[in-house]
Image 1: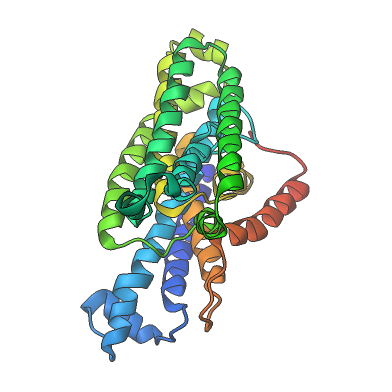
Image 2: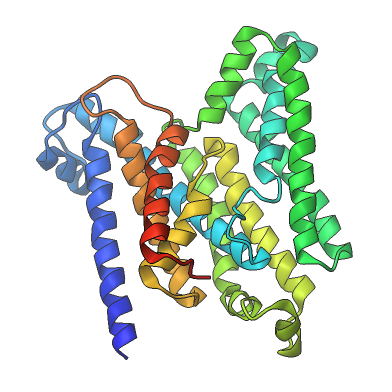
Length: 343
């Protein structure tokens, strides 16, 4: 009972921090907007200056919501992969999903010279890149699913996923070698990751697929807890390993693949947030871990985005660099302080 009370207090505290970080994120930027006007904009759709209303509603608010989706989605997909493979180094991109997306984008940007004229400009458009990244992720997913049906050993699937990632990385390297300086720069900028390029229409599409991934993840809580006991014991309890594995891989692909397609590959969050959550809550129960990872992932992403904005400056740092620079030392400190890894 005391544990339940502790968890309830922890979740209330985390939700309060999430709301605080959300408002701080919206208040920061190159244009200084009073906090009173931010509240008025969110509640009454009214501010002293019309430009402030436009900035909040069409730029800062979508970006903050995107940060919550990205942080929570990658955090949960990382948790699913670490539990499935019983490997603390597994992340949402362990199956080669990110590499598949990168290959799709590389083919569009670095291989655009082969398409020529109107086709090249169509492919390099915003939606062309999103579709290319989605198709790349989807094709890698199909390959991994085909393997997962035939292969019994879960660890073999992880290794095969890493091999797919190596193959796609090799193809990207060849395309990069023949690409022009302008094409390489565009591809590198995509690889930095960005939360600020999504419109409300984009967010609705992202939310729909993200919602499906979250629902499947929640429905997988019982199988995830059973898998912690080991595959042989899970089988003895009546768990269908192949079916559960397939469902978990689909949930991860929906979350990580869609997020990567819309925002680019964002490092660290999926790998580290589950570890931070386990250290904070000191549990392996996914009924606690899943919502905790959701909230903590959103908080960390909002903090990283707030730092990346460089308050009162026109510059924005690459979000990928901030997530790794801020997050990695935190994980190291937590592990050194605890001296053991909860799993």
